[in-house]
Length: 315
Length: 290
Image 1 (cartoon, rainbow over the protein chains, first blue to last red):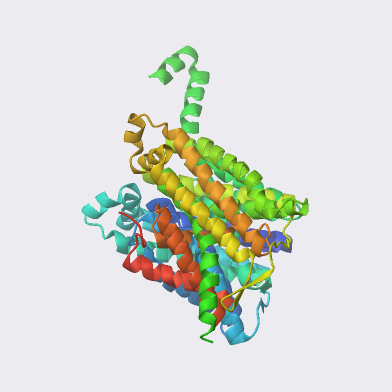
Image 2 (tube, each protein chain N blue to C red):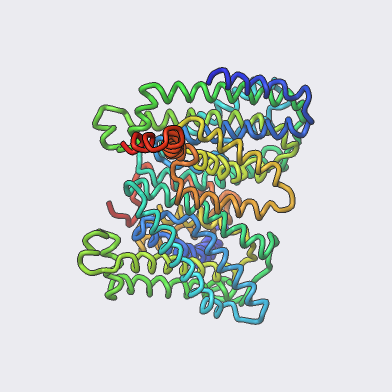
């Protein structure tokens, strides 16, 4: 398994050497979606508190890049973008996560609009204008940065899932009252993990900015960056870490290649897919794996041993 | 400066009536069907855009709800009867159902939005009606403002009376409080849920019509209205119909005051500040229970 992953990493890392510049950018974007989907699933998938706010943190990251691009080196901006997202998520979490999940969702829903308007206002006041041009950064650098970010994100989330902390999150999702009675400080656990997941989204936003070239509040805080990670995570399935990754790769690729004229039709299609997945595949593609495995197992047994095998399979 | 306050207040109340109508539907849908219908704004958008389309065909905007109302009611009815009902059947717990319903509504929101975008495009549709100015007590309004408010108020009162006095209203309230027992008492809960959801959709559509009478509309106005509806509903108390109306008026007044004395663009941030304070102090809302 690890060897396979290493192979993929090497493949991605060497891509800029022989692939077209466009493909490199598509891959970078897919990696950004991976980070977003995995971070979203880390909190909303486990605790059941549906956050509709990824776009807010992405936007914060984008704007951090826009404001600091001339003054600070790229890695530093990424760190700052992460910290700003972290702080903001902490604030939102402290206000809303003490209450029932529905209030949290309501709050995160409009958060994007809130930030869009607030930032627009500040833009007019402080900078007397809207919109920013971002100096493009070379594609290979962006890809490698995202690669590092993806690895960091996945590792951190992997270890969180395996820790007591991760179990706490799952138990909150299962039955919050029971978790509280077990001695878990549910509020702090929720707030901190929400903040951590948002940190990665902010970082992804910073890396996203240079490929957008021109940004304003509508572009930076586009609701698209809330919808897509959720779709990807749900489709891929949140039981396993690889679920959102698979979803992100599939839909990231689809989105990039189909983006052109038929965009509205594809968004329509994605909406339909989301509804269908919620209805029929609530555990996503990953959820199908156990079912497929057992069916395949029985089929293999039957083929291999004929009647005897079937008897075995039926016990 | 200060002389403008009465004007702003009254315009705010007029605006708030529409917000109240907007929120009432959502409040009903959550209170009874336990679905946080974030598609709500899209119903508003459909109401507004369809009204405009009809007005282009020569139909009086204020009569448009006669056609749009039942249409949106039917869509809402079907949505609950098919999608949310199956989700409920498959859900492992009420909390899981709410989460799934929310995500499904998220998907439906995109479906409606993009169907509308494909059909009508994203352009701004200049719609207005009854824009003649009226003078009253030294203040000027466009005629459509008090008229919209009157319609919103009338509908609000009608819904309230329906819920509190009529037999079906009682069935609805029973289902909201305890669906299991209501079912045992002979209430056809599936029908009630679908009906309520459709009613919420209808109210949203009428709110859309009223909006289109005063401002230009487009296929993108769904989402901002969902945000406002959610804020108003939370402020008024989830599930409380009178609460939504009161909260709507408050938000309407706030919006006019902020736009008048400060910056129009800061209205949503101000709502959020109010929401944050509310959530810290009294999360159940002004007239909320539990």
